[in-house]
Image (cartoon, rainbow, N blue to C red; front, side, top):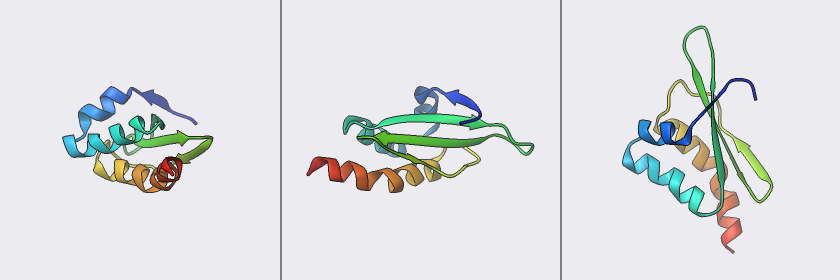
Length: 86
């Protein structure tokens, strides 16, 4: 994926406590999460990638590290995490 990696601690610090809980919830269930910053002429875009049990999901491009980005990842990753608990 083109762009620069963003430390997960930087992502968590940019989020509210509630939004950060969504990331921590996925990590506790065995997901691997990475974040990438992609340069654009009108400002950077951020993409989260989550993987669990060989399934990889990628969010759309978002203009900031915010709740929309985290909810996008949650919606794409959640079905695979729940399937893992059964």
